[in-house]
Image (cartoon, rainbow, N blue to C red):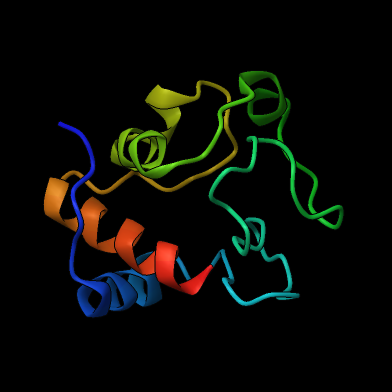
Length: 108
């Protein structure tokens, strides 16, 4: 199933509870355990902020991040990109992924 527009507010709440411990979204935001996500859409995996040490798996995958690639990735990051260091188990519900991606589109 491809991405469909979700609910920004619900996506923001999901981001705060499931993603914000490792990621920031604001321009110039710091990297935590995961990279800052500002400018994510259109970026190639393993590239972005120079302050973050991306995994070899992320660099080699060279995935161009967009709504549909994020939709697939966020379901199960380790299955989508074997060898990734992202410890997140994924968002299994399509609706949750749509909501988070909609929030990321507006906040990054």
